[in-house]
Length: 225
Image 1: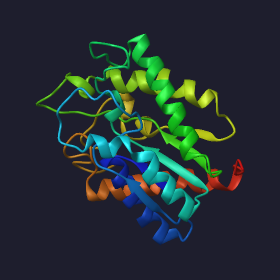
Image 2: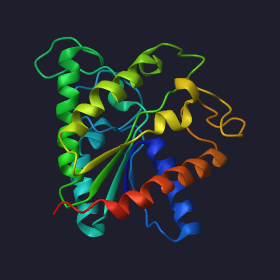
Image 3: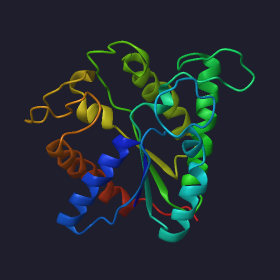
């Protein structure tokens, strides 16, 4: 399988690689890039990342898909598709929950799905998890309604159009007890020490959890060639 996403996706790829080494059931290729999501263009903030490289992800991923030809592509991002964007034709940025933004984001994810599945792979798309920052509480992507809106309103619209080639896996519910961020979870302290990323122990846990979801998924879904 191939993992696509941001720095959270990178940790998930690492966890899956560890799980695969133990079970001998997974071969994992990491095609993640820090600071990048699925949606392209319209960037409004100045956070440190190579926006041009983010927007060129289709070229990079297509080359890897052609050489590796995975059965499953895992999409795992923390929140880069939830930040403010300037939708084409607009003078001011919009945020998720705005109908115009939502329509644009659905279109972006549809295009992303088309690219990620074009070699016949089944797309396992993870819900966006809850995140927390004491410094930036309720600001931007740390507003709890944003991932919830993405998971309940945006992602289902994309999945509905691709029942044969896409499965949504609920990472949010797996790591956000009762729908809330928890620093300690699954018997581990500092499960996500910075409020976004996993600890080493947490990375192993999420790899085992997700591997347990993906192995049976891979056995039952056909390629879409």
